[in-house]
Image (cartoon, rainbow, N blue to C red; front, side, top):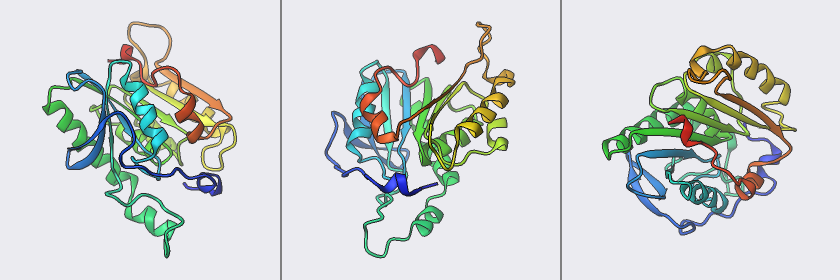
Amino acid sequence: MLGPQCCENPPTLNPSCGAGSVQEIGGLKTYVTGSQDSKVAVLLIADAFGYEAPNLRKLADKVAASGFLVVVPDFYYGDPYDPDRPGFDGQSWLRAHPTEKGCEDAKAVISALKSKGVSAVGAAGFCWGGMTVVKLAKFDCIKAAVVLHPGPITEEEINEVKCPIALLGAETDRFTSPEHLKHLGEILSKKTEVRNSSQPSPRFMLLVQNWLPKLVYKTVSTPIISKTFF
C-alpha cells in the first residue's frame, strides 16, 4: 500500500496548522473546519501520514468554504507513518492500523456527527484513507464517497458499494493501476445502487491523472463532494 513514491517527499506535520480547530469526535482527536451549524458534513480521511499534514488541512478548509462541516480524524491515534523514526517498521505499522479498524472508527465519528444534528455525511480519503472509504461505502451511513489515489481495492469490495462513488487514480500506480481502476469502474457502472434515480447517467465517476496526493491538496479547485449527492 505504501510504495517508494509515497515516501519520497513526506509532509512536515504541524499540529497547529489550518483555519479550524482540533476537537474530540467519536473518541478521536479530529481537525474540524467549517460551519458548526451545517447539516451536511464531509469526513476526510488522511493517507498514512495522518491528519496533521498541512496541505490536507488546507484542502479540508477549502471544502469547508463551500458550506460543509469538514472533519479530519486522527485514525492513527498519534502514530502516523514515519519511516524516519528510529526502529520504524512499515509492515508492523500497517498491521497495527488496519483499514477495517479505520472503518469502524469512521462509523463512530459519523454517529457522533449525527447525534449533533448533522443529517448527511459524505466521505473522501487518500491512499489508506481511500481504502477505508471503500469499506465504509458498503454501509448506509454515508451518502457519497470519493476515493483518491487508493491503495489496493478488490472486486468484492467494489461489488458491495451502495452509494455514489468517484475513483480518482494516478497514471502511474503500482497498487491501483489505471487498468484496474477501469475494471472497477465497469463493475460500478452496472450497479443500480450507485445510479441516480432522477438522472439517466450513473452516479459514478472514474478519473485517472498524473498526480500524487500532495499535489492534489494544492490544486483542487472545486468541492470533492457535491451537495447534489445529499
